[in-house]
Each structure stands twice: as structure tokens, then as C-alpha cells.
Image 1 (tube, chains in turn red, cyan):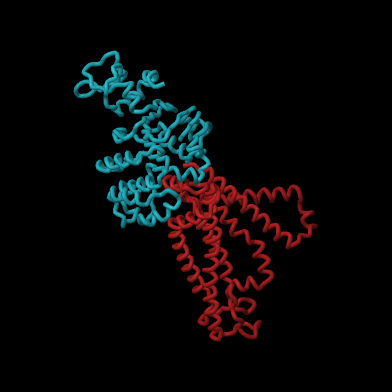
Image 2 (tube, helix red, strand yellow):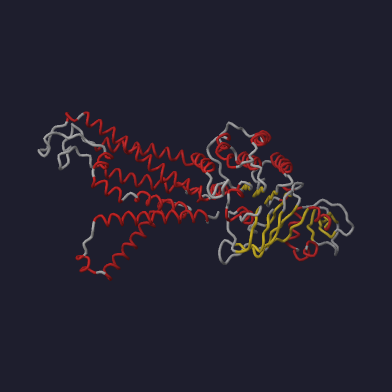
Amino acid sequence: MGNIFNLNRFGFLVKRQWLDFGKVYLLTLIILIAVIFSFYCYFIPSPIENDNFDHDGNLDMRFRYGLFLLLGFLFISITSSSYFNILGQKPRAIQELMLPASTFEKFAGALFYTAILSVISYLLIFYYIDLGFVKYLNGHLNEFKMESVKQPRIKEVESIFKQVATDRNYLMYVSSFFPFPFLVMSIFLLGSVYFNRFHYIKTAISVVIFGYVTFYIIFKASTLFIGDKVLNNVMIQKEAILLWIFLVSAAITLTLWLITYIRLKEKEV
Amino acid sequence: MIKVNNLNFGYSKHQTLFKNMSFQLSAGHIYGLLGKNGAGKSSLLKNLAGLVYAKSGTLEVFGFDPAKRQPAMLEQICFIPEEFYLPAVKIDAYLKANAPFYRNFNHDYFTDLIKEFDIPVNQKLINMSYGQKKKVIIAFGLATQAKLIIMDEPTNGLDIPSKTQFRKIMASALTDDRCIIISTHQVRDLDNLIDTVIILDENNIALQASIEEITEKLSFKKVKEMDASIIYAEPSLSGFHAVMPNYHQEDSKLDMELLFNAVLKEKTKFKPYFN
């Protein structure tokens, strides 16, 4: 067997990690389903209530964008933060480090659970709950009273994913910000290896401090070197900015993953 | 099998636990690693297993550098720590999840050991007593057929019959290609089990010698009065338990506790005998 990566051994590792990570993960999924379901039940337009339409005259489903982003952030950050938290407990850390699998396989296992499984399961859960409610609403459209003059009739509600996939503008933003969830994961995964206790809160505090310091430095540097006049003269292309957002966030994500791998390799008990 | 050269290790820059430590361990032996609290028994075992990194010096375990934690090396090491964790699953599930990593895992041997230790197989591991959990870990470790077995305080938490059982099982587990290192502060638990003693003191190995060599060179006796030939003695009800040079090649039973205390207190006197 190879000492860096062996598919067979990686398969054993993924199965083994399910023993520990799986139960917590499934429990988190159940909570996630309950939370999404509750929010939809509470915020979905209802024929017995007024104020069901947005300013374009469509049934108001705007709550789901915030819900999708906020809950998604919480879900992926919590699952990433909990993956390596066992390394903070001496007995479990010994067992993990002594397991005959390479550090790369252990790291790849972490990516599988945090970057692949978590994202896919979150998207699927959100998709199906959203679709269920959208179908329910579309089946009861005639029960709503038209309040807006902007639309001749009540338009069918689209699922959130269909909206994104069919709108070029949405699609452009989504593809530019595509690395962001992975960036969040990489930060919290690194935190789970780096800190021995209170991983989540310590990582969150570190991110806030780092964010403030970076913002302050960039702001000061730009004021010092560029000043107001140059900024006013520069024609900034939106596509170029979005491309930079994509490239920079992807580069930071990959760097953080690399640091996590090195920290894992150097972990001592 | 294990080569350590000029090992320097400490948990901080200013605190040195091992200073230029060098030794070799070979297969076919059960080594008893003794030392005071804080002497570095567990740390030495962790160095050998690659769980901590040396500041300088070289360590070789089956030709591997333990710090690299390569799977080929890890599957040949069974490390049984003093504190351990077992998940909330039954033995079968634990085996299914962990045994595949060890190519030579012997399921029949594991079943035999579990039977011998009288472990309830249908109970979840997490609900077992500390002693039962330890037995499961030991049984699993031995069934991996690892070439190096490292045990840190293995008899802690075992009742008296289990300690006897443990000694019996460990004695039978020793093969020509296997090296067993047992660290303990309960030296009497290792009686009749280990064949080589390693005593740690003051950042280094104070003594590494086989039981045969020790009893060949030293004599452990009960004496009524002290005399000049006695290297070290401890008072007892009927006189003294003494360690003295074995000038007349007399047979005596090694008193591990006495030897341990003697080496720590009269290190310089012992040096000429074990160089």
C-alpha cells in the first residue's frame, strides 16, 4: 500500500470516521431540516394574511435568500469546526494519530466530510424543502387575493435554485462567490486543528480580529498611496472585480487547506 | 528494531526532558520502562510512536522515522495509552471500523482474548468499566499482530485476577519478531514478565540491563546487619533488604522495587557494573 494515498485505505477511513462523525452529523442534519422547515412555515405567504407580495407584485419569498446564506454559513462552519475537534482530547488524539492511514488520507477524509458531504447534503435538503413549499404554494395560488396592480395575475413561485440557474445575473454572482463556502470551511477546519478547546468560538474571534486588522491596513494603505483622486478616475469593471473575488477567495481557501494539512502533520499529543 | 541516537526532547525550549539519550531495543524482548513521576516514561514512548517530535537526534523504528507517521510503520505499532477512548458502539462495529487498517489482524485471536478476558460482547464499549475497556484495547492491540507493542501503565485499573491474566497473555504474546515495551510505576506488576529493565532518571537512561545480567552482577538479599559490600539497603521488619555485588555467582530473585530505588539513589555506585 502507498504511504501517501491508497484508495482502499481511504475507503476504510471514511467508513471509520462515520462511526464518530456520522452520528453528530445526522443529528445536525435533523436539526437543520427542522429549522428550515420552521422558517418556511413561519415566513411563507399565506392566504389568511395580508402583505403577501413583494414590490414587484410576486409572492414574497425573499426570506429564503437570507435563510439560505445564514443557515448555510452556520451549518458548514459548525460541521467543519467539529471535524478535528477530537484532536484536542488527548486520548482520542492518540488514537487518531496512531491510526495506520497517512496524514494526507486523514486530511482528505476531512475534506470529504466537510467540503463535499456537508455542501451536498445542505444543498439537497434546502432544495427539497424549498421545492416542497414552492409546489404547495403553486397549488394554492388561487386562494391568494391579488393586491398588486403590477402583475395581471399571480405568478407561479420558482424554486430558489431554478431562480439562480435561469437568471444570468444571479449565476454570475453565484459563480464568483462560489469559493466562499469553501473559504468558511477551510477557516473553521484549520481552527479545529489549531485550537485544543472551544474551537468554534476561538476561530470566530480570530476571524473577526483578523478581518478588522486586514480591513484597517487596506483602508489605511489605500488612503496613503492612492487617495481620493485616483479612485474617482478609475473605471472599474464589474467582471474584473468578480473575477478577482473568485481568484483571491479560492487562493486563500487553498492556502488555508494547505496550512491545515501541515498543522495536522505536525500535530503533537 | 529501535535505534535512538542523541535524542534531545522537551516540551518547551527551556525545559529538557531527555538529553543526548541513546539506546537500542531489539525484537524478542519485553522491556520494562521504569521511572519516577515526570521522568519522561510516557514522553519516551510517545517519541517512539511519533506522537511528539524530538528537538534533535535520530529515532528509527523498523527503519522508519516515527515523526513521519507512515501507515506502513503505524500498522506495525500498537500503542496502548494510559487514558484512552472507545466509541459508543459494540465490539463488532469497533472491529469492522478499525481492524481493516491492520493487514495481519487476527480475528480468531481477538475472539479468544475477549473470551479469556471475559468481556461481554453485546455491551456497548462506552458502557463498560475502565478495566473492561482496557482489556478490549489490549486484546485489539495484540490481535493487530503489530511488531512493536507499547503499553503505558497497562495494569492501571485492572483487578488482581486481571493483572495475573494480563501477565500470562503478555508472556504468550512475545514472539521472536516482536518487541514489547511496558511503562509502569507499579513495578511489582511486571514481576516475572519483563526480561529487560530500563530505568529513566535525570534526562537519560540510568540503567538498561536484562534481568539475567542484573542478577548475575547483583545479589538481592535479606540481611540482618549492614556491611561495606552493600550498595543499597532498605530497612525491613527483620533487618534489611539489600543489593550487593554478586561476587559468588549466587542465585537471587530480582527485587524490582529495591533495584529501582537503589539505582535512583546510588546511581554512581551502579555505573561500574553496567557499562
